[in-house]
Image (cartoon, rainbow, N blue to C red; front, side):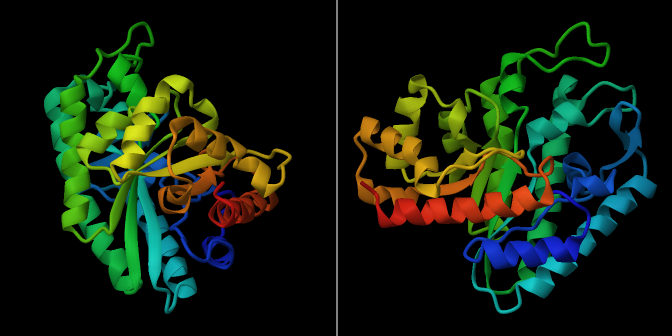
Length: 321
């Protein structure tokens, strides 16, 4: 979300997305509040500091790690304040193991992605750290059914060998799909064992690997609906019929003129008809969301976007045909 006021943001979320609030990230506050920094603050026995090139692993928790943990504590305080008595699904998110491996640097400056053993250790640290984080969220909001979302915008690039090395002159080799699946399964499985009511994986890149994410245990897949092509039809149809929920990104993440809510979900209806899926499955299977984070939007647009997806979801539920 845009801005830097945790209480104001939490108040707005609780008042707008009443049936599915979430723990916001506010990266405008600086290092440690950003997507990668937030997750580094959650890791178990892994610490990092900020270099000009990005986050780099450290031997001990320093100022940047402490700042990340402090921002998270502030955000949790605000969430707790504005969800008193709430019962229902509540989303929290963290960077997934492969995007984290692509963005966190080892001591020499190369990404963790270039070392298979380091990637395994990072996934283990993430799984352990999320276990504690989920317990803390459930303690603060006892009535919540916590949904964990792993943000994996770099997942497709990692699978295709598209992540550049530190020099920029070459790319890291493609990661084996089974290795990718195993690490995701480990993190998602640990979250479920720690009490997560459901898990989701988000990617705003083209060619989301729906089948791989299903096999890894994701209960839902979050994606930019505008990037779908007809070659995704088969895997999406199989996912829905297998019980996977779709978090369909239907509203741009930056300031854009918004159509009427019913018009925003016309593409979802068209996809449903093309796949021959039961209209009644729409309300059970689809959550309407922005295409990606709203941190790059104006505060006014971010509020409109959230209200818009709520109205669009009601349109789908009320008129599934």
